[in-house]
Structure formats: C-alpha cells, structure tokens
Length: 78
Image 1 (cartoon, rainbow, N blue to C red):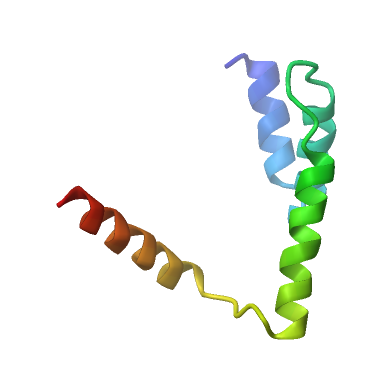
Image 2 (image 1 turned 90 degrees about the horizontal axis):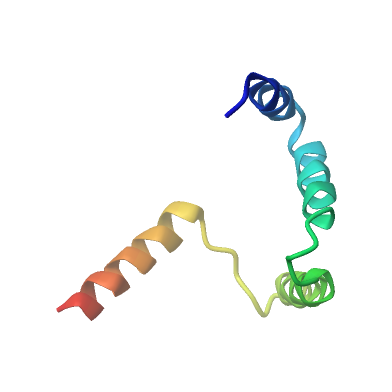
C-alpha cells in the first residue's frame, strides 16, 4: 500500500460510519467491472426492514447469529 493510499485509508477510518458507507458506495460506483446490485440490495433492505417493522422478523444479536452459523457449520462438517 502506498503512503498516499494509507493516508486516505487512515482519514476515511476517522469518518462517522454513515460517511464511510457513503464513501464506499461512491468508490464502488467508480469501478466499471462490478455489476450494479444497488436495486437488488435496495429491494432486499426494504424487505428486511418491512419484516422487522411489522414484527414478522425478529432481530438476532451478532454474537447469537455467529454462534448459530458456527454451530451449523460444525454439524455439516461431521
């Protein structure tokens, strides 16, 4: 990593989370080889948010979901 890139990364990491997300989105938009998934992700985010707001979906804390994932992967390995 060049010193210029490292400086940009360090500065970016100092931004609030929302601004880091906006920066990431803008940078991804400049990469021509990536397919445009914005519409699909927007639809998925809306679907999940609607499920949460309606009570059909229940949020699971990160540590619990990771335990579930790891336990499931252990079961599949045996």
